[in-house]
Image (cartoon, rainbow, N blue to C red; front, side, top):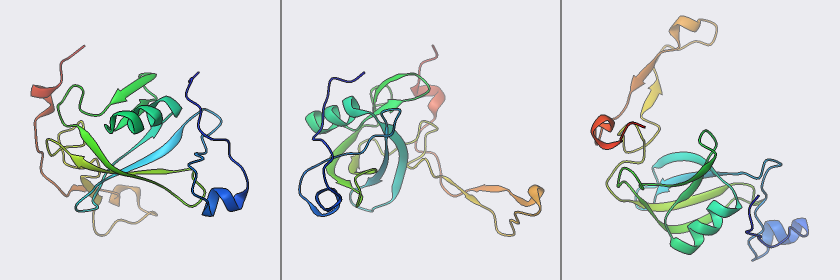
Length: 153
């Protein structure tokens, strides 16, 4: 359980049109976070934050997320050096999604070595009625080789 407390959510008008950050965390304590490049607006990744990750991000200006698979905080770039320095934090209209605009230090946001986690696209001719047609194509090149960056645990 996090010790970080954000302002209580008040009226719809305050949440949607007011000037106080009142993030809406899900019942499991998480809020979705979209991260994009502050210069190009390219979407780099999607992750979740809990209150502690959001508070640490605000304090350090380094993107910090909650790893659901590892059950712990994750500071982007702590292993790879591909950090995300927060230039701006936005919320959507009802404050249940965070948008980070970051400087993508090192040039890669994805643990697979790509600038963006969205490095594949659905191939032309894909048809939901034909599962074998649902092919992905690479739309980017790797910035680094993950085998040389991440240590095996």
